[in-house]
Amino acid sequence: MGTRIRVLDDTDLPAARELASADPLTNVFLLSRMSEGGLDRSRLGCPVHGAWQGRELVGMLHAGANLVPCGEPGAVAQLASHVGPWRRSSSIMGRSDLVMGLHAELSRRWGHPWSRTREIRAHQPLLVLDGEPAITPDPRVRRIDDADFDSYFRAAVAMYTEEVGVSPIDPTHSYRRHMRQLVRRGQCFGIVEDGQVRWKSDIGVAWRDVCQIQGVWLDPALRGHGASARAMAGVARLCRRRHSTVSLYVNDFNTRALRMYRQVGFRDAGEMATVLY
Image 1 (spheres, rainbow, N blue to C red):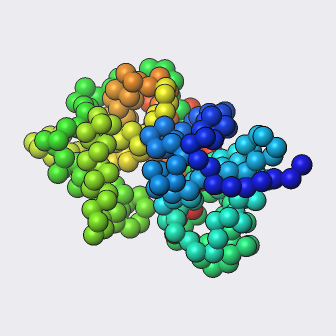
Image 2 (cartoon, one colour; image 1 turned 180 degrees about the horizontal axis):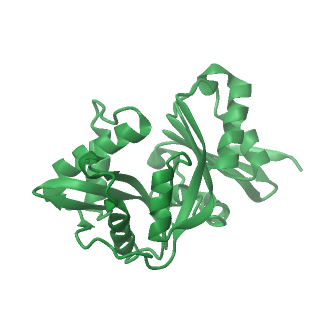
């Protein structure tokens, strides 16, 4: 049976949700995006290509600022032909085998626009906490509100620059708007002392009972003293008031962070990868 590929729309939502929800921890970004914006290209802001075998959707590719694959490896490789040689995405992210396979196929088909990368993080453990934290949470951790925003935004920029290697600030102020939206949704957490954010993290995306923590940062002046574990436990406790399953992924070379998350009670649940341009 041949594979048909086309851009998905809202009529394909049931099939797309079924495919992605087979692994909600890995696909929470896609599930969150579909929950908020459906599959209409103009509303979502980018196309989502789908690979069909008969009436079954076997692969998807979110082709926005983040290129995100989902489904069977063979189908994802075929979807690479519909991305084209002009790279508009700043990253490829998702399940490790799909990301690395997609990057290899894009590089083979289209060459330098996709093969020239800034960094490849091929092994990022996906961790999950689906019970209470294993250690006592820091009681100072709370939701961030508008009054804290300026300090929180400075911390978010510092985290992003340190983690990704480039500043997120751009002339359109899109990152500032994004962070303001997260704060107003109650998805940002921190420790604030004397008006300054000392610890921060966010619910980057969520779908039903699953949320994914991103943007974890501790003031450099406070590092190395064991403060992160209890702060992370505080974040997990607050997240679990809305979502029974808290997930995150971390670079495999960040051994200190991995030890900290496992101290809090997170366990391994898979492997992600990120290709950065």
